Structure formats: structure tokens, C-alpha cells
Length: 144
Image 1 (cartoon, rainbow, N blue to C red):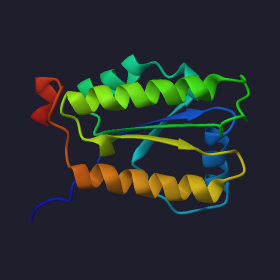
Image 2 (tube, rainbow, N blue to C red; image 1 turned 60 degrees about the vertical axis):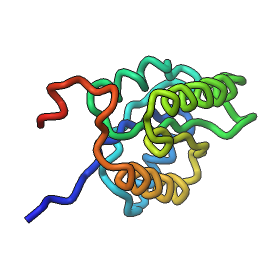
Image 3 (cartoon, helix red, strand yellow; image 1 turned 180 degrees about the vertical axis):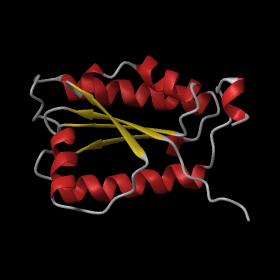
Image 4 (cartoon, rainbow, N blue to C red; image 1 turned 135 degrees about the horizontal axis):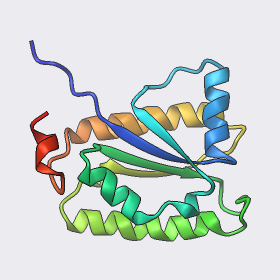
């Protein structure tokens, strides 16, 4: 019997908004897939594009970056920098042959637990649809 593909997803969540939204979703007992492994960052603007490339290199099937809504950043302009970087890295990965569905970006505030849970479901479904990653990945992870 063939095992269903269960994607590995790394989620870089802004400490002030998206991480707090994830925390509220957990406390509220909202159901969402357990696939996103959360990495808490001070601001979505602090997510270096090399973190995304490294995750893919290490065999992660999808990456999700989530931050404060535009204009609500605790560091004033961090999410604007993140949005620009995200656009560029997404185009670079597409040029390298990586599916666009593998890289996701969202705005989730601390009070939007429902939106966080729904976005986690959507991201997981997109990555699951894309299948296991096979480009730009270290050789040893493909054989696991």
C-alpha cells in the first residue's frame, strides 16, 4: 500500500503578529495541519532569502513566511522589505525550476487565529499538490 505524501514545511512567523495568531489558534483549539514547523523570527523582514534557499537545499518541500499586515509592523517597515524580498526570491526560484506553490507569504495579525488556521491548510494543500521536492536538494535527502 502506497503511503500518502506528507510535506515538510518550514514556517517563518513574525513574533508580534503571525506567531501570536498561531498561538491563539492553538489556544482556541482550531484544527489545522501539523506540517508547518514554526520558526519564530522578530520580524518577517528579518527572514534572509538564504534561509529559504537553505531550507529547499535541505529537502524541505515548502516554505511559508508570515508577518504583520502592511502598515502594522512593529519595526515600521520590516514587512515592506519582506514583501520585496519575497517577490524577488519567488521569481528566482521559479527561474530555477521550483514550483511557485512551494513558497508562500501571508499577512496574519495576532487576533486572526482563524485566518492563520485557514492559511496553514491552504499552504499545506498547495505544497502537497506540488509533491516532493526534487530540485536544488542535496542528494542524500532524495533517497530517504
